[in-house]
Length: 266
Image (cartoon, rainbow, N blue to C red; front, side, top):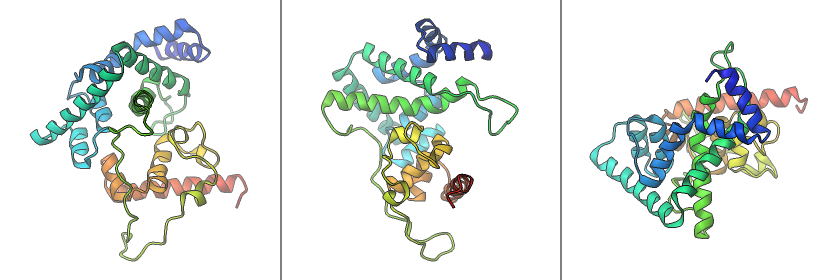
């Protein structure tokens, strides 16, 4: 479908036009069916990076998660992945139907439609970010959140036992120069009364200057200052080197400082 036609459908779907929503769901039916097959039947194509990236959100072991993302699983690691999928399937089958799964996936897709804002590509300023690019970047994260919330509701729990969030690590004792780093500010000092959750990460509740950051940058902030992950922990989650993570935070600090100065706060 031409991008201009896709954009027109998206704008109509945002206004609640049912036909536009149905048309978009039809256009992306193959993409959505992959997740139905994965969640309800544990069928997936191991060569598909989207599938591996979604499954990795449920894998607690950082080594297995990194191997999965790279598509280089040992026999033992593959067994852990399959066990995780079987656990998810058991919970989904016990507390939901295939139609429940499909509805959750379609709801997540339409959430992505509503969140999509046409903008210029940062890497290619002369090009627009297509909806498909936005979808492939954020759908898997939002789907996990919605699946977890559905199962939490069905089980009557406060947290979902299969979530892969690791226990917060201790603060980094030293920086790369070898001397003790100053203590990190607390979440309360940084954010005041803001509630730092998935909705904040997605930008729904983020206030200045954090609303000027993108989703990935807010996620890094949450992991570091709210969840207490070290740079090495975050590096494992995003399969990058700790020094690269520190560079990300340096750029985030610069963006926040610039936003504050533009607002005349300092």
